[in-house]
Length: 114
Length: 116
Image (cartoon, rainbow over all chains, first blue to last red; front, side, top):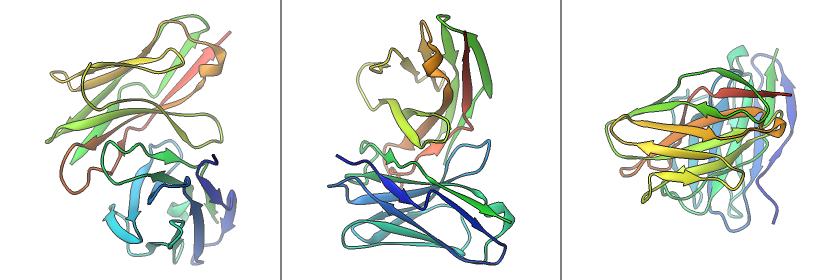
């Protein structure tokens, strides 16, 4: 089975622009989470979606938003980009939302903001 | 809230030597514990996890970790490393109960470099 896929692989934007990142979960998984990994740091939780509803949100500004579609794929949107938004954005899927549900990560989207 | 401290940012070792990557956590509630590995230019892969039962958990590629509740630690060990083990290793926790038990909290990572 295919793993978690993310697109695009790399993205370069300028300050003030908007960006949309996409994620397709493993077949059968209903939950998608988004994490931001800044260079030299561990991933930080941004959002979790389950059955198209937001289940949790990390400590990120309102410029960050996401949604989940009926096929369980997801998009992460970031508005008014700042230099500090440059990071690897990771998507993880899991079957459910419990702590025992293993989260499987995609390869990430590398966002560079100039 | 939870926090994770990985005590070493970089660990260089020679091939076939033993290695220990240290992880301590802080949490007001019980947690599940995880080790993830990230190879260059790739996403995270689950290496092993502790959910319940035996405090010693093992991966298929020779790594093991032991949950020590009194010391709030979950150190990762391998008795003999290979060049291919070169990667960044992340320790993570998630709460066992409450509304946010899906949320993984990661440490800053330990870069393991295995030299010939």
